[in-house]
Amino acid sequence: MNHNYLVIGASSGIGASLADQLAENHQVFGTFHHNQITNSKVKGFYYEAGQPLKVESLPDVIHGIAYCPGTIQLKPFARISPEMIQQDLMINVTSAVQCIQAVLPRLKAAENASIVLFSTVAVQTGFNFHSLVSISKGAIEGLTRALAAELAPKIRVNAIAPSLTQTPLAGNLLDSSEKIENNAQRHPLRKIGNPEEIASLAAYLLQPNSSWMTGQILKVDGGISTLKI
Image (cartoon, rainbow, N blue to C red):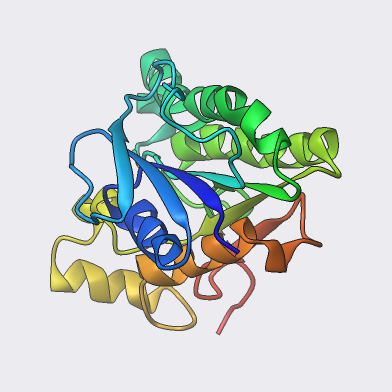
């Protein structure tokens, strides 16, 4: 069955891969900010975090939304400013809430709708210099569970918590072969995540074959959160 999906942040990284995968069998709408969407099957429109999401061009029924924008600012705790916290929360949390609220009537019009959000492995596993991202993504995990309870049984809500993934967002952390290898060796599976794998899980969570899953935080992290080898 052909469904309608909305991917916020569909022009690069995990969001672009997710939009590509869904567009093989469904109608996909995607937002872009800095980069244009290159897949002609994805109906793109501009969106800037913190601004109202323009839903006029969307169909009356949306079967799923994924909110993919994020930030990675690794700083010592003593150097975190209130402005940094506000900026991180705006991109990671406030805008996600605004987008979901904007399309909620369209999600409620679907028989089995789904929301997918993104956290990070750093929320449940403490890492040095990850306080800033853990603040905002910790809020996303709380939102995932609370919203899943509030919207059940009509709408499912789940989140994915990846470790370091080869995307433009993580570019400054993986901009040399040495950095890639050093980060790969921190993970039990000895490799960095790739956006296609993360997107495959997001696509599964959006579609009806995951219809008995809600309120979950799924770790896709090369084993770093649970294994010591």
